[in-house]
Image 1 (cartoon, helix red, strand yellow):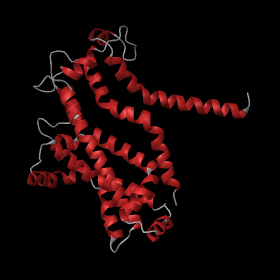
Image 2: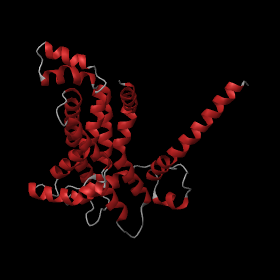
Image 3: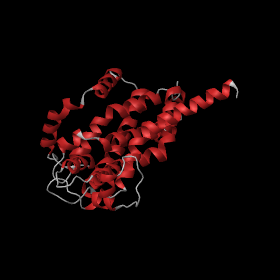
Image 4: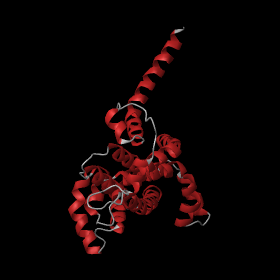
Length: 284
């Protein structure tokens, strides 16, 4: 075997080793969720389920106890959907508009404004908890889905603005100038020229925001009420609810349910995420 072939074999072996290392926790979660408690207690952690069953999934979804309530993860999951969809769309739309203005319609102080927005990317999440609680109280939307949406929109604006602004800097200014000479206005240029060129960075931002908001726990546990808790809070409550027998299969099924949306998004749209990052890297 040639030296080049040995290098390829070694490379594939290393890649497969790392893939197995990172996929093992997912395999353990999935396999455990399909076992009954008898096999969980007597079997090996990595053993396959002898009689796969979705009973643990059904219980985690509809009847597992999350504290004093035994309604499963379903209401928490629905809260997350109701929160994530508008928060992702609004934060992405405003970020695209901000990036367009800060890159193609510069004004006096625009760089300073962008610097302040950029500071929000590096600001610890814990810093805004108290002032944000006061703002939500003043607006009358504390402990509600609308309050969580507002929190995530504001928290996501620095990142979405940064993504779009850096991408739009690479769009030739001549396109905007030519459209202006032809009589196109601010909104016409944005809708008909800039936005159609934004598909790569749009996919990156949507996936980024969806993942961050869906997986968030801190804002969810601080700013939610009894009827507005997201799925991450529900999962924590389910896992920490004490009972006579710890049902690890139900806990694993609940974790899979909570992580399934982000997993599906990356499986279906992961290639667009990579393409978008690459396109943004070579712009300009």
